[in-house]
Length: 304
View 1 (cartoon, helix red, strand yellow):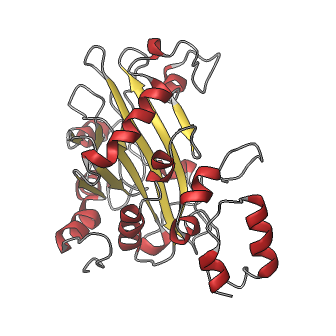
View 2 (cartoon, helix red, strand yellow):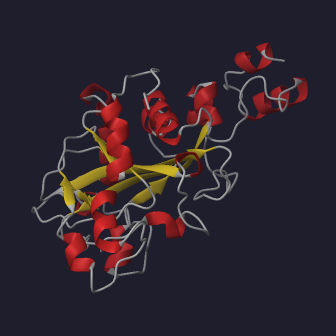
């Protein structure tokens, strides 16, 4: 398979790595210049230690378990931050990569989180696992088009002491557990973890992985360290068996930064019909414009 050339060019070896490993690591996918404003947003949202934000109590108040504290500093799209951060999970390069990995020219974003971790705040060590249980009521598809692609984006430099992502390649897990086994037990877990690979990489690195790839989070062992990241998931628009977020769960959530700044392609990844869809007519365009006065409606008007 040759990757389609849209916003960047992908060699055949990338697809082979994705197929054989279940993971694709792309260092410096986002440039340092692209990250400046986003890293400022993270410092505003989370600080560089939980002590620096005494007013912020995380997303699991009242729970002292390490499991809850692992996910304490997480926010879901849209974010109380800049347009740059709100649009990062809808970046054209990320949409293009998702189309290639899923073999579809119609993909949608179904998960987007910001996530901060701090040394000493929790034990971030996890057991090796596959992520499908909280994405689908079935199991991961054997076909790329019916699957999903999950991304972990490093937004700070990650060393061995900063909680790096670890994974076991599909080739290794298949040899240890049998073809496409989705769970490990006590008899084979030690063999599995001996094969894990650690992703130590700079800010801007994108890690793509499948729902049936064994992986885990690790603890931050450097003193006074932190890790900024985003967790993002895409699927083909025709795939109704996978999900995570319903984007507009309450009218109180402010989508204006996204609605006012995103392109039609980016908005389509949130389920908004593309220009030319039968959904759009004079009435629906007028009422959408009333709801979002700064929404760029011209492409939709021109298509009817």
